[in-house]
Image (tube, each protein chain N blue to C red):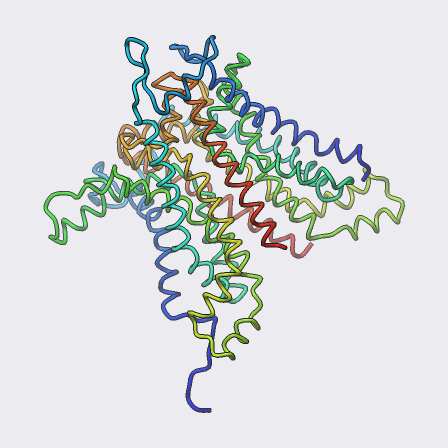
Length: 289
Length: 267
């Protein structure tokens, strides 16, 4: 296939994504330097106000007062995204190893079972936890029935329930990449290690983990990025009171009508996520060498 | 032998029980939802017998029907558009020359998978409002096409890589021109993967919530956006029933994509 035909075939995909996805990212950067229109949208003049809002609040007399509440939301989002990533890694690594150890037929079934949740609506998967965790929900009902508690435990609307929702949503993203690196493991390596008196712990530390690391790294980026911008878990399981950056962004375009601030927040998220992906692909190339 | 069990690295004590637990974690919440959907009591948590009545209620709910219709129309258009674009793109990426722009093209096409949904949602909103485009369904069709492209592309690209270029070479040796080669050799071999990609695109479009919520306007509410509105008002048996329907649709389509894709191995 000649170069002209190649470019003609790839052009639609690149144009559609370039125009309707990459261009809007830059447009959002431009919007973040504008003044908010109280009816939605933006107006002149250009200003840094949106970014100042991360740390300051504009008082009635137009002076800037230090107010870190938004910065705290950003930090909390990063903290919860990192916590989600670590929990997913700890929970997911053994599952990936278990699947690798199975016969090819069983591997296929188990892999399907890990992948399936990814294709099920996140809205519905998150909602299921409301059914379980709310005051009249399954967990409190069971505990009350067993006579352990008389008043319902506040299981919903806290950092724990948000974290649970995030782990539940993104765990498959960790298992699959780790599996795909471990799958290529050479059994003779492990047998040789055992012949040299390596126990299970040593086999894991010296062989399995070094081989799993690139997959774990890929999984960590795949979990961290969407967890950082997640909307549904904090909104439905955090009750909208415990704001995370995803729900804060969404609010700026609905109830708060502060588009520049929302655009600024979203630009920060994009920069963080793209940085993480670039670092990872650098690291992956280093691992290859 | 000395009676010591041979070392079997494929077996770690307790690991199968642990993995079973993780799968319970994955699937028990979904099962609970389905069970509640068939509960005849309006009080969701009190079991009062098996009943289909909430599914009937959902079927007679005009607003849900309208939203479902919007969702299906958008999904069909986005599936056709994204699959056509993805098929062309995959062929260029795997069979094209030159190879030097390939990395950049792949990175661009993977963007919808990399950028967090909330960012895609609000930047798309900004883009359409900046252009003064307020076309309801059309805006949603465009937005959905964009994020469906990588999902449709991946299985097609994988298939092209797996089958190699030998059959196409053979066709070329027999003096087939490029179009006949595509019609008679590449397309038939690729069809299972194209169908699998199309089904995936359809499911992804049908399930999308966040982008649809930010881009949709009053008359163009999609089913997940409508369900979200119901959820905000509280846990009701109708929500359980409609969620169960959407859950079943996703599972059926994904299983279908897998079965269609499997045919790849025998082609």
